[in-house]
Structures are given as C-alpha cells and as structure tokens.
Length: 140
Image (tube, helix red, strand yellow):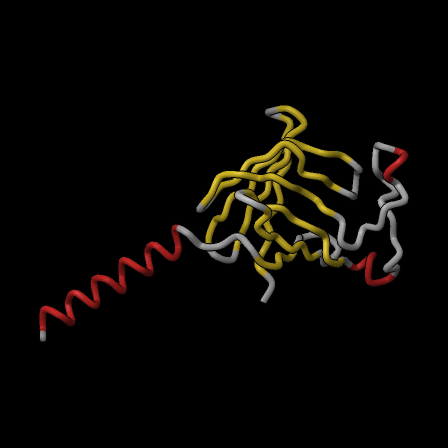
C-alpha cells in the first residue's frame, strides 16, 4: 500500500510538471493598453489571435482599422479583427510573420512566449534589433 501511495504521488508531481510545460496558450488575454482583450485560439496546428474588445471599441463598437497602412483595409471593423495567424511552435514559444498592431497599422515579425500559465510576452520586430515587447495577462 505504501508503494502505491508513493507511486501515485510521483505520478501526480510528474503530471503537474507536464501540465505547466504544456500549458495552453488558448484563452482570453488582457493587453496593457486600452483594457484590450485578445482571444488566442488554435487554428490548425498553429495559434491565431483576434481582438475582442478595448476601451475604444466599448465606446464605439463600429470603430474601424483607420491606421492600417493599406488604405483598402481601413474600413474593416476592429472588433473581432484577426491580429495574428499561423504562429507555430509550442509549449512555451510560438513564432510568426505577421503580428498586427492596429494602433499604428503595422505588421511585425513576432514571437509569443508563455512566461507562466497566466503571462505572455509578445515581441514584434520591424527587423532585429528594432523590436518592442508587451506583457499580456490571462483574463480571469
């Protein structure tokens, strides 16, 4: 019986360690600007993210992508807009080619790093070393 309890305890500790290593990135994340919220979800074997809300969207749900560098895209709605697609990697870090920032209308090479189960660090680069980062926290 004692050996069974030790084995169960060891298995529990192993499962806890594995759960952190494979902590899901999917969910709703709070951004540090304008009380934004982004939903990150699986899209095939990659992850994608869409803008759910922000202070400006709450004030004007019809807000458009007015800062987009492509004039043809400036009339699309910000609410529900895809901010990134096809970020691949896994368990703690994902990389992709287009991390869109609606505040300046730019798309950046980026990476997303899960620092702990409730904290993400996003880094976008025009070209290294010209990069900027933000820390997002999982919405409760």
